[in-house]
Amino acid sequence: MYRWVRQHYQFQLRGRRFLEAPWSGGLVLLFSVAVAMLLANLPWTAEYYQRVLNIDIALVVRGPGSLIDWMFPRGLTLQTFVNDGLMVVFFFLIGLEIKREIVIGQLSSVRKAILPVLAALGGMVVPALIYFSFNAGTVAAPGWGIPTATDIAFAIGILSIFTQNFPDGPGRGGRLGGDSGDRAVLRRGGQSVAACDCDPDPRRHLFPE
Image (cartoon, rainbow, N blue to C red; front, side):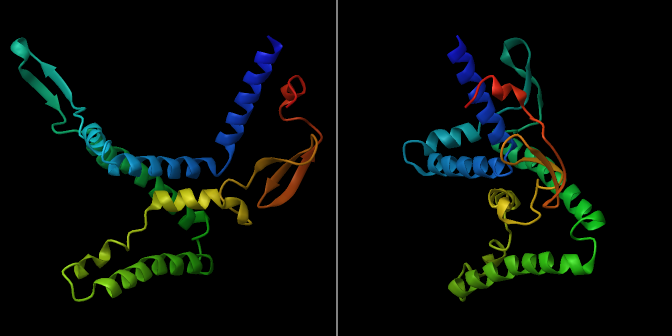
């Protein structure tokens, strides 16, 4: 019984550490993209993948004789729900985050914003030039605008994986970081501002790893 409880606790502890890690979201995103690309391109799964995307999830009220009396919204598939529903919420949150950075964050002054703005412009111009250099004079040349759109979700996911390499990366300010032993240190902006010799999870003494 003790062994099972100890294994269960260690499994929960590993899961919590993974979910709290700043790179976990990016890793899950890249893994999901790899799986989706395989399912969409493998010959024996591509058809089923398209069927799942085209599942009708609209609300339907049927009357006598199985006649459709009411449907809302019409033509709502799983793919439409993701593109026109979930993505709206995602970009709304991105807009709020950008506004926060403009008001009180890294874009609140010209000096702070110059590097991110130049990086954003380079991320649009350079892919467009590369595309145009390969497709100049062809019917595909007008499509130079397609590679200028950097996928925000991918950018955030990749940055979250490498966030530990930045001095003030996302999720590093004001968090509890574990030092050697049982010493908990409060970090803000990469600097230790307070410390205590306390155990943030005293249960681990009952179930040592």
